[in-house]
Image 1 (cartoon, rainbow, N blue to C red):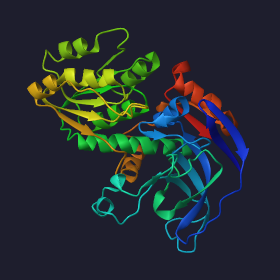
Image 2: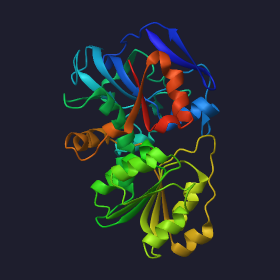
Image 3: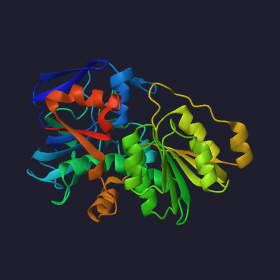
Length: 346
């Protein structure tokens, strides 16, 4: 089978490797159909690391994916050959305190697709995954729709942690895929006024199309002043930081009302620390919440997509075959051509 290996920063090679085989009764062999390019993939591609995790080249990236079941282990009952599935990329132990209390996203022994030292990624034609990590897809959900379910589940989980209430005002700082999906989920949960920002013109325009009341480009306007003016100096109830940048963290603190909540969804690449203005946080008595992936939310957001409550198809702006993986990653890394979500189709 063919697989896309990241062999150095910004360099992919397509290699022929053996097709994996089922070795455990509870495992499933799947044939990959689509894989999305995630922001964490881009950190590995450009910087050779995400946070404190350094890439050991060569590696196979990719964790947002969908597939068709090829074979199943003799203990598998959830799916059968030919079934269309989405993939949960986090293989948790199911036995630690966190798993047993329903927070498998915090599993102490988690193995995640495309994370150095854990599991190979999904940019390959076949993969073996536990039965617990496949989610059957109905016929009205495409393979590309299913790719977006994983990032959407993170956004839905983040909105849940924000404790949003109907009528709340929100700011989404960074309108890439995570920001745009967060905007959609928050609006579905009753946000009355929503602000969105991004440095890419096409993403600002897409935020408006997907329901932002106001959308700004911080390179063209003072977004803090714009948000404060639009709220008559009050600020917003919730600020979702979705860019993984110091500037958007600082903007979030400034645009929040007293008693507001900053929700951190962005992944900061090679950085492992932010600077928080403690004077602003103390005087406003702000709450900061960090989001770690998601906890059993893929099935939930699947229902939202099927009901037409969340638009995932608009986000997929570019498509590439496996042998053009390098082109796909370079496009996303350089924000060219109005890219929002790029997908590798097999």
